[in-house]
Length: 94
Image 1 (cartoon, one colour):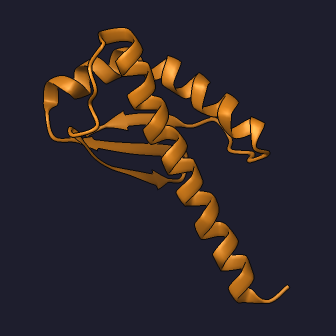
Image 2: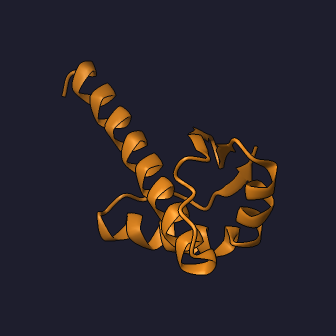
């Protein structure tokens, strides 16, 4: 295995994790509040065991914080279904 293929795989894995968490946040918020928050989400970054979710409205951060455990459990189960092992993480809303 050469270095470039290993880097590409790590990069792809990070993007997949970010997109699954992004979609899970939208899905759970939509089911709980019947509101699409896609326009309020700005970015998701992975930093070791922390996942930083940046939004444009602080009130959305507070609402998401209430559902953080459900978002975490759902995201982990989706990641396991596609054979990505991601250890326990904490979601922080900025």
